[in-house]
Length: 356
Image (cartoon, rainbow, N blue to C red):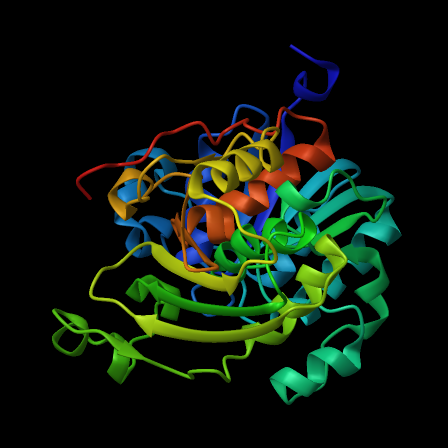
């Protein structure tokens, strides 16, 4: 056991009863180097966590949600981890309070945020997309944002995780551009499960509307396209022109994304498959498969699979991932592992659920 693993790191989770917070809780409870110190929900403070996450009842027992003030009081000295599954526009303000309290107490605090609040380098860039003021612009310089597969290390103390659709888009786009395989016009269609819309029911996530149905939403104007474009340029050195059509699928978990582009030079699928494998050779959770990737092979896991095909001067890269794990909580734990000195795979080795 390494020195980093000798003592479990106390961990706080923000985001209450949301799906991402629930997945963070699931992963923290099973992590060998983390110890849950509290999960926050101001609206449900004092109520049983198992009432919101009955599938975790055996692990959480009589654990109750804490309020913001309760969790702020628990924050102690030494090394701590703070994971946020709070919504866009809410997370930044919450995190600012904890970072301030940590500074006052001399806490060695690592923050990983799953919202979009720290995926931009400036408040103006964030506000141009989300149409409201940033909740903590003074903290932007303390956060790095990238997939773990695309940034070896960061000297900034905190991380803004790119998110679910962004993860799938970046896994395909970055090697295509960085390796000089494709032109900068990228065309993508991504189908997401209903958990991607969050826990609060709306018309488009109501089961009778979603079941046996498929429909596009915000085609070519999706708000995550801007952050993906910026993050792709940061990781590849090339700024893409991203044409993205998201779609709502009739399943609960997972994303299947297809990205197409024009090849810069003729190449067969085997050659490109090999180049992508080399690119992700050091990435324990990314596999380039021989055939076509399938959702059922990765749902419930932190693994992503890529498939490649070519025809008449164009390339298509297919990506599958679990939107709540690799696209949110699992990717956040990957970053936490790196920042805390654990093995990157710690707490994340569970395979896919197959017949979910």
